[in-house]
Image 1 (cartoon, rainbow, N blue to C red):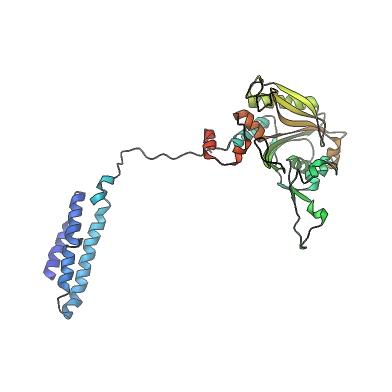
Image 2: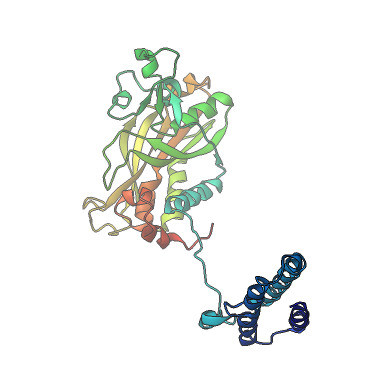
Length: 351
């Protein structure tokens, strides 16, 4: 048996397959169920116990040699039934999909870039706000409807007690607008201010094609000496022309906001029907895109800014509404449903 093993060892060491067929023949000859190694182990059963001590080690080394030779070469060939599945390395590789920005992020970025050209800087604040920054400092009267649970998500202040007092229950809320960031900015610094405040806000509203319980806003603030309503109008005219293109019509309508006086809502000619009338503009040809106005002197006094020396304006817009008009999307629920078919339409800009 030892002479056979020695002969086969020499053969294995000299074996260098050129094709997959040669390697498969080697496997069958030495490692197959009817191969040489199987026969040698059958013979091994008949030898004396004294010879088994010597031959056992030699036979195991021989088996390991044959297996190593096969394993060293099998990655270079496709054997047996897998021959038909051999990869063709000349074929082009499989592509992968490139991610893109969310449409709301695309529009937010564009809005920010437009106002940056006018010298506005970005400011951010917390999404959970106290009553002062979200309401009181902005000149909201105690009886104002926005303080009602129907419009605002109030957050209970955590305490060691099992129950919260009435005062603690109304102390914090998910911010209903990013105007709270304006208050924090004015409290922390001195005029002039020229800042933009983008962020997510929350209101307790029924979800529909035109409304949601959370949405995104961009608000702007400009405070300095001798700021007028004319400055506000020219700033917003520039913004509309840059975002929607030259020729977009603009109109201002008197309105009311607790923190601005005078106040106005700004409409643009409907980008979907071009002013002819459609469902988006409710057949009027106009769509409101933002609210604005001169900052109420009470708000400036609340943050220790001299309202006799400084004036300013503020404006705020919903990014969803701006995006609806820009891309002619009729249902804002699509923005938060994560439907890949919808989101793929905006993958022209790579992250």
